[in-house]
Length: 75
Image 1: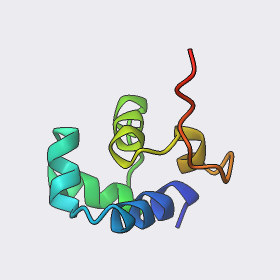
Image 2: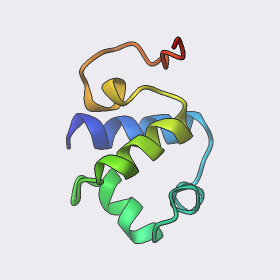
Image 3: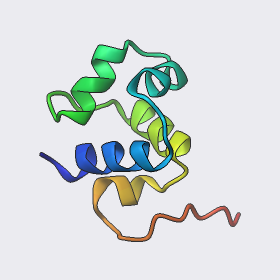
């Protein structure tokens, strides 16, 4: 399983969100979201960014480029 799929699943659990709720937030079918978590499909850049926003973490964290979850909100 990739870092991305593991981290979105872990963060979703921490935020106490269901797969159905994440799919609704993203505006996609729940089956597609399940494919993201099971590493069967990769999200588009737009959907990856929406996932990061929904989970309140950086895209770099989800991709495994950093261990820091914080989102930099400085201009």
